[in-house]
Amino acid sequence: MNKIMKSFFRKIANKELAIGAHVQLGDPCIVEMFGEIGFDAVWIDTEHTGIDKRDLLHSLISLHGYDMAGIVRIPWNDPVLVKPVLEMGPDGVIIPYVRSVEEVELAIKSCLYPPLGIRGFGPIRANAYGRISGSEYIEKYKDEMYRIVQIEHVDAVKCITEIMKVPYLSAVVMGPMDLSASLGVIGQPEHPDVVACIKNVAAAAKNAGIPFGTSIGYNPGSSTSGIEKWFDYGVDYMFVGSDVSFVMSAGMSTLRSVREVKRGMGD
Image (cartoon, rainbow, N blue to C red; front, side, top):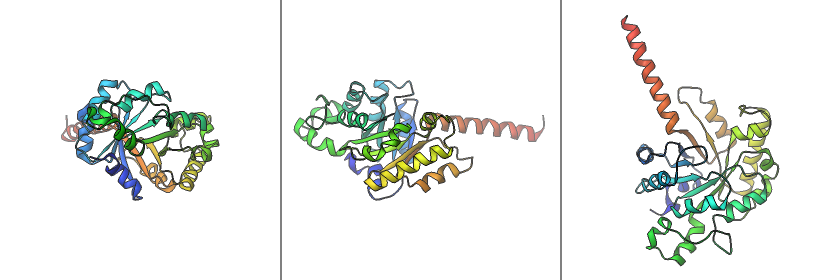
């Protein structure tokens, strides 16, 4: 399936909300289940998890046949870390914790071949194991690969207008928790200073025509205000919840429900 035609990209292009989920456990069956559920994308996190390269490769392979994009968050803004992920053929990558225009430029150049960037040539799964010629892959790649930077530090917010001008930047995504930490209010993503930064990024993205998204946890059993505020900010896409949170939430709910039934019947 043409990457650019997957529902995640199609919905963003059509100004519809695209919804994804986070993958933290690295089991390809989970990716398949998310595809069956109907998510538009999965955010496969290699920054904060134990997912290794083989886990990642298998997870990306499990996307085959689903109308769901595979977006990989790289551990750090380092061309050496970006390169092997690109060779696996994800639909997009997320570079975390960028703090300046120069760091964003490095992130984008790490994803592009010369003369546009600094990526070394050696695609494996990315060019269908050689079925797609090198010249064809190089030509199509720069348009099909989604390059996202994560805005999660106040320094990036201060230069966000210039960041939006970096060539070949595909989208930006917020990181509310680390942003709150950089503002000295860690763990308070609702703090007025954090909200002001998010609104600044949203406005800059809208002015530049750059898709704007977020990465958040979400418990369907709680208030929906956490979701509603992001709609007010004008997100084009959001990644909500994760395999870990879904299992923990459903598991605790099931255990609590069974105990309540037993109590209701008397000891």
